[in-house]
Image 1 (tube, helix red, strand yellow):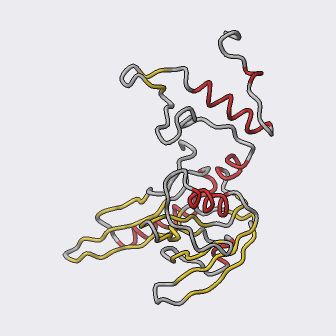
Image 2 (tube, one colour; image 1 turned 120 degrees about the vertical axis):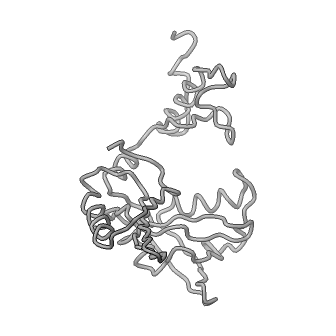
Image 3 (cartoon, one colour; image 1 turned 90 degrees about the vertical axis):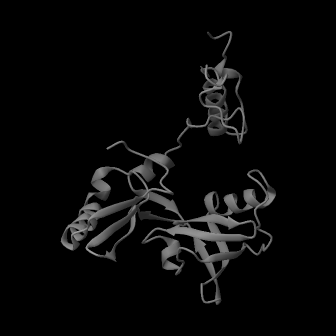
Length: 222
């Protein structure tokens, strides 16, 4: 009841944060009897909702295959090895020549970007730079050892979640179709790309299929 949970008691420096604080608190009431903790318990940040969040419109736009960002995401493969895990076609990162697997050696002039824990200063710096900034400067290293610098601004572009697809001929009549499907956007936004990929699979006569969802954050059920 209102005496137990007072929504007006949650404040912050901006409305979106205040609303998220309210959602976080509300999410912790329903307890999972198997664990004794909230169903939305988030071990990395206790008290924060694991699944629920307030959308300011950005998530809705992205699920409709339109987004305004740099078009890439980083991934630590070792403590001192930050790599590009994917790049969306047509994005600022794509236009800058950035490819999956390139090593990021500096961001906004900072070379100390090694992994230092989920809430470490370096990790937070990296997250803020690529996810919450409108511009970014990076130095990247290609597989051949050469380096180059990029200066990017966020931009609006159409997401194609089918990042890549290919047929891998294993011999002895075995052909594996491989497709990276990176986001469950609206079906109408990705139907053409999916049809193109699966038409190629059908033409090639694949016998097996691998659907890569490693970096897919979810989206529409359809």
